Length: 385
Image 1 (cartoon, rainbow, N blue to C red):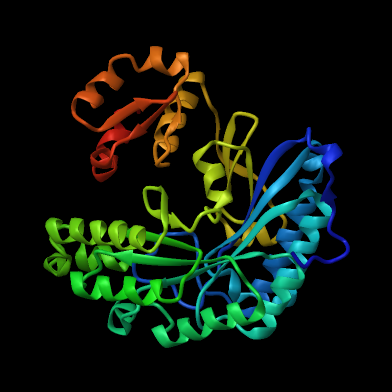
Image 2: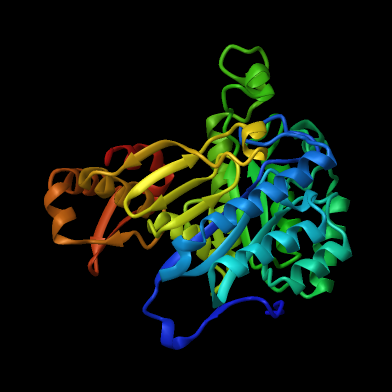
């Protein structure tokens, strides 16, 4: 990892420190996609510059929290973080390195969109210790990309991907999306084949969810008039199987319901979420889990730019809620969760019932979803709430 000299590394003698993950939210994009319900929107250069300064201020305010913790992963998400200038990203990471103890082998990821990447930005990321890129492609079909409201073409993605390789990045994720309006099984298979030919280390393959409050909901939501354009349930399921089977055939291990990786390249940051490790969210609307408390930063941009870092939706988790989260989040992983005596007692009726239905399996000291259970994971996971 190429790092700036100011980075504070954790040495083996400090291995006793508790682990912490950091998430930095960049709520800006060139144009909001028609399906997106995330906290993000276009903004001019002056607003983005002001936000970087405000975020640096919040990072510095959290310095005391990191005094007895080592940061094992940093994830810069959005929005489109790569919309920032390379120097702005460097400033943010310098603030992180100055305020927190960063593990020598920390995973440092930035989300990128084709159309916003340049060689200078990529070189800057490398110099600042970024060692993983997550590139939002969604589809290799330009018609589908236009329908989604993406700002790029497949050709522009390919240019960005190859440029990242040329710059020295050896850990690349590609985001893909199935069950799109007008998408066929054949076009989905073509997308998978084209991406697999590039041999990324990680692939995230999600099915489109039509969220209320988005332009897509107005067009394709229940009774909206164009919902007939969405693939039917059987076709959507076949797309799901295509992803599973084609990626497995190429050596990708499915380690979570929608995530696949070559051996050794599972996303450590996301694993932390599913395993309920402590994480600190920094930036507008970012969420945190610290000391058994979940909370979220407010989502008012003008107040944040003025230095208001207050929280909302603060929730101190009860023992019951922790147990529910352990199952609801942990069962997303294909290896499941450790089967403790406490969980066996609490779910003494749920476990046998799901086992009889062929949805759950207890073996080797763990409990996990079966292949059928993964197929109907929404139903199974709801049983633990």
